[in-house]
Image (cartoon, rainbow, N blue to C red):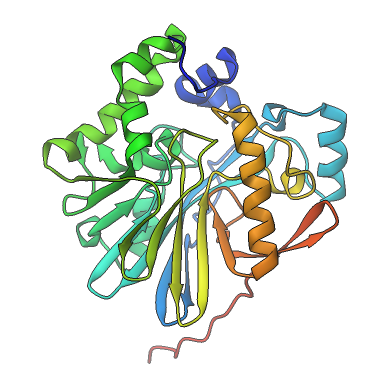
Amino acid sequence: MKSRYLFPTLITLLSFWLMPTQVFATQNNSEQQLQAGYYHFQIGSVPVIALSDGTMKLNTSLLNAPEDKVAHLLKHAYAKNPIDTSVNAYLILLGQKRVLIDAGTGPHYGPTLGKLPISLSNAGFKPEDITDICITHMHLDHIGGMTKDKKRVFPNATIHIEKQEFEFWTSQSEKEKAPKALQQRFTKATQVLMPYKEANKVALFDGKKQLFDGLTAIPMRGHTPGHSFYQLQNDQDKLMFWGDIMHVAPVQFSKPDITIKFDINPKAAAPKRIEAFLDAAKTGFKVAPTHLSFPGVGQIRQDGDHYHWYPILYTNDATPQT
């Protein structure tokens, strides 16, 4: 029986999972200074901290679109290939809960990434402080930072994952259906989660589910089988953590039907993205895609068949320490 999910091209996924420097162009970082890596804001009365895991050079040839069309959209946005792409995570301070949305790449993608622990520390928190981690999906750039040397980086955290997502990536039968060269994707995902599973620190939910007061998981399948949004709502203010609904903003805001080779099911991913864009533009709530330029939080507005991005305005209103 064939898997109901489609796999991107073999070479692309091999590069993404086994040889990331071939997909993400290298950059000379020897003389670069470390950026701040965190940003405080609020949703209603709930404090949220955007955390940078770093940036990468993403080759836009991974988009499923003609190169000249992509090049035109990039030029219009004053961008070029390869494009600088952020990997963001978010910390929500929900009463006594310290809830992390995704966990970064860890050591898997080179020196320009894996900075989540530094960003977290600079923001005033330790890995031990994190009580819960809500995973949008089980690609390695979202879960790779959860373990180091086969040990839990966040020893007190419970990992929340959509059931269908967990069962797909930890399934031996799904692994065997995949091309042999891609089976390591399943192996790595399982290895990252195993220390938490052994400690009874993995909590599965099925579809739409309120996990905490004000924080609800929303199914948004397509990019992966159990890809989830997380909706934070407080005092009439709302933010939707979008995970991998999009990867290349200058292209996909203009042409939301364009998919990327990381999408397991592109035929489902494109309409889900359009659905998400329409919803956000109609109601005006804030969104936070993982791969939008840090801090990656803002609103969108529809203009015909395309969309405009409006990042939240920077504020620095804390009282100076004396």
